[in-house]
Image (cartoon, rainbow, N blue to C red; front, side, top):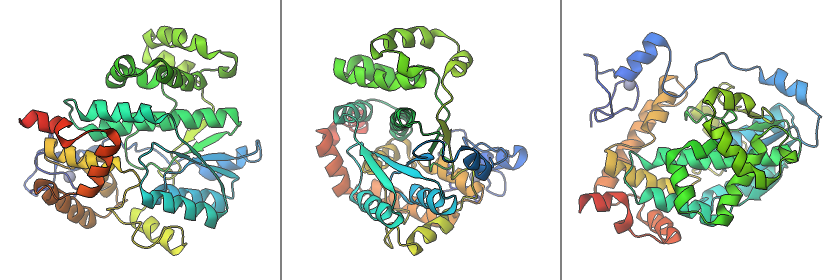
Length: 369
Ligand SMILES: [Zn+2]
């Protein structure tokens, strides 16, 4: 497949065109205006100063969202051993964490000697979200699903940090374009797809859980009873985006701590292995901490003709944070395997079984009948 000479974007990517040197329009835009999709080009924050100013104000200095992947593993190391913060590591368990992620988590918290908690939101919520999206027409399920899961991660972390008076939440996301700032009130309920799932698929208990999370985005959240939240959200959902962002609580502060440091994928991969935090092989590009990834890559590649991660990884390649050759080889391999239906069959089978779905229920199957 024809791809850009500088990034990973393929010829069938929406809105792409190439110049005579086979450089894509997104790379040319980046070169000309110094901006890349979803990755904010702004001066780096002075993490050292921010942390120093907020140290020792509570039982913990920082809540670290820890997925068990190499990035958040490195983040945990950075904050505990380099910045010397008192950290609480937090894993939001969707029920779809891979075994590799579980092993990495266990090994890392032991080696770094940090306190760690798992929290599993009701599993029916995740299963309903995944089943709903995977079985309906969409322009790429990975973007939608990861966006919604990220919102739930952020909101559960916000609740934890608020209750425990922790001033910061640190995230290991890099170049993903996921917007980590406090969401406008109504958060994912402003997302039409999530709102449909919420209205049509969730029972009263599941709705209450989601609303309960929103309470913690409001100022003086602890003084507002959960029963009032639906009314408040209804009112605030109607107010303009900017105003609701203004009203939204600014505490705890959410930091993309890795994106704010000098991130380099290759260096981090080597370091987490040499520090003994991740076993050799488990830091590689084909290992994932979320089993759903396999299914999302499979479906999106079938439907769109390219890998759903191609845009975010192109961002990293463009800015020199990841190696182009390695990712091209991986993406081409996946593309071939998806075409031949040999891609991650075992893992995909496992995910479908957990969701009580068959391949026939998935959107592309219906589409191609
Ligand atoms: Zn390009």
